[in-house]
Amino acid sequence: NPLRCSEENVARAGRLLLEARAPVIVAGREVIQAGCTNLVQALAEITGIPVATTVGQPDAFPNTHPLGVGPVGQWGGWDPANKLVASADLVFAIGERFEFDMSAVRYAYGVVSPTTRIVQVNRFPGSLGAVYPLELGIISDLTWFMETLLNWLRGQAVKPRVTQIAELKRAWDQKRYGLIDAGTEPIQPEFVMQEIRRLARPNAVISSEVGKFLRQIRPYFDTYAPNTMLYAENFACLGSALPMLLGAKVGLPDRQMICLCGDGGFTFNAAEIETAVREKLNVTVVIFNDQCYGSIRAIQKNRYGRVVGADFGEVDFAAMARSLGAHGQAVTRPVEFEDALIQALPADKPAVLDVRIRS
Image (cartoon, rainbow, N blue to C red; front, side, top):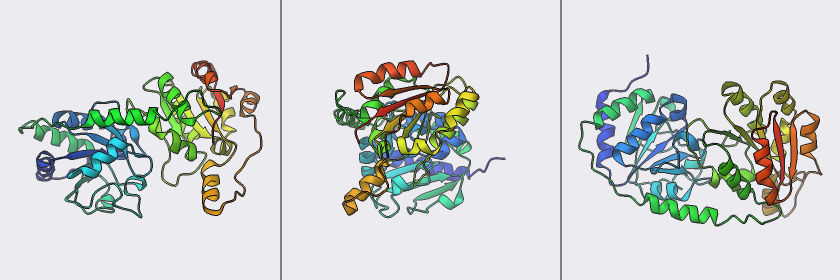
């Protein structure tokens, strides 16, 4: 039987939500795990309240929905989400543990204001109030809670809300797309991600390594549907993106699958391309190749003025892929990328694109 809170607490949470002047819903990782993204969307549409996600699970609510404002966080958060959460008088956190990017651990109030009231709903008791003091903490199965809350709301007078969501999103689009120069060589990582998002299907599953390139491309992770983003965030291990995506391909064989790797992260599990070939798991791997451990190199350079053990020699990953039986292609100029990806996505074998990017 699902863990259920009292209906009194559901009603209390609902009253706090309706009485708030500028509430924001934050949908966390457990919303995906509970399979209740549709219920969060219904809550947003009934109330007109904007929905932010976490950096670690940006597909918990599609930012392409009129009420979706993208991920919130000091590292990787989007301007619309950060601005709305910072000015909110109530944060309604569903399935969210206040992960590293949002709470920032050392700087707990970097995004959330100390005066903001917080309602946190989670099925894990240890997560309640672990980072922020709460106005109301609720331990419950998320699907049951959301269904009960929606039923309660249908009996209430819900006033329409007018927010600046569309204006904030327009300004964000102008800012992020204004950074892209399609003619820049070496290729901008931002341009590569923009093209991937433009050419991939809306329900394509995208997995990503961590690293410097991820920080550069994260503003272009537009989401359209749940269960479409995979990456191990928050001090995560390198080398996880390709194995995760192969597992996803086994479970969802008809979906497009795209793996985003730095050259450093790819080398951790590059031999799994042979597994993909042997098992006929036709995924597309895009390597953001700057011939170094980008994050480590930048930290060393900035803090110590020198670099040790972070630069790589010349590696032809496209040739490596071909030697393992996959499709492999090097991309050195922006004008080459569109055709390369169009060929790779429907290929009858796994594909690796070795894209030489600006460091």
